[in-house]
Image (cartoon, rainbow, N blue to C red):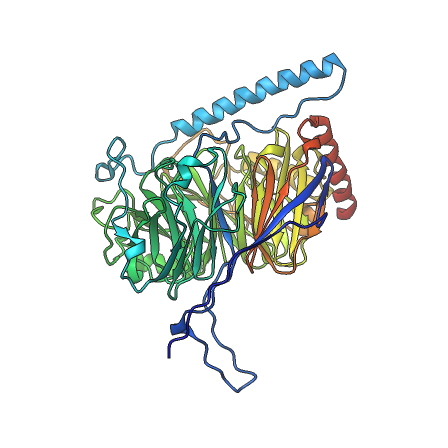
Length: 587
């Protein structure tokens, strides 16, 4: 007989004085702990009891709880990097702060102009003509009346269709996945625990999702979500319509591990698959069985075996004339799982972290890989760009958070503080300015860590300085784009050459692993165990910090009001104190 599905409800708790975060600018108080209901296995997947105590039962792929936060109103984002005003009564200090603030504004304006000037992905291909100005399309299938075996059940609030237009326009919505359930939450409601909509899938687990910021409005929201079966759903929650892309793995039958809309595009998004491929899909196109268009695929396989870190194969280019069906483009980076990728703030590059322990930086507009960095050991799990695009931070299986300089093409600091794998990293744009940066990390050790750094105050080991001086001397005598060092086989980049040949523009630089003794060590400014299960997501908002965990806990901390008017000097002091500790540790 079929086993009935017993659904439990979400539970919200308001801890009394529990788990505060003590930071230099003040105390972040835990506002609430929303525990999402974990759906039981579908009756068709009921476990079979095995009397053998040593037997292992394969479990479906899961990613814990990931969130996509958004608002349907005109809530302001981060228009410029955080710039605190001094509380000092010294007029000279105030004037300097104002002058620096105006300089920051001008830098921000130039950054926005740079973003606006970035060409659209595939704009040179007439077969990918922009659909701007046309009537906004919605998926065709009704999720409430779906006869698909992919979807098991939908639980919908009566007021869901009316809620977005009647609620607080500056309030926050969230989409959250937990195993085979996908929930739409109103985090600004008094009843946060009641989902506006909950979709239960039959067997597939949703692993990732994203909201299209270019098309969202009070009457329309485009969401894409990737599953453990490889299927991708384009979902419009207000009309409750959906479309299924890569159905039954037509294009790629490996799990979709990460998914993001291409910035500025209404219809194109990128999905990372567990077989090391990034695939560009169009939400409005049908699927077709994918056959690689690369002519030298055999040669590419041979090169991949000889130099696995150099893999970058364009199996289908965005410039291909065959754009009637999905996929739009296919890029292969590895034979191992792509864990995450992130777009640069200028919308020109992608940073990709892979299970093989590498971070690849590509110019995705021109389909060229520029840099390959390696972890200390183990795979890399998460990646994030700084708000100004100058730095990339990664976390991985080496229990470290690494800070990489984009301009210098190297690691500038390793951050020690986690006792297990680092699962998510994120910058806090409201605590960053042109010199000082704040970011956070969470991991399988159930810890939330906050970090401050100022590049000018990072310790510079003597060994590293000596090596840099010798590199400059050597570089004046060798004008080649790359050279092989007999001691380390290091590939060097001569970025100051005036010649700009076609070969040099396409050169990929594989950077060697920096020894620990030659890299600055940075300690956290705050470390806190916030639960009993591994953390898997971290997000910063203007008024709060949010985390989510493997078992469904979404915790929200109110920001300290004391930190709103902190001076830059306070930020610099925090970074300086952290650097002194880091220098002591490194010595």
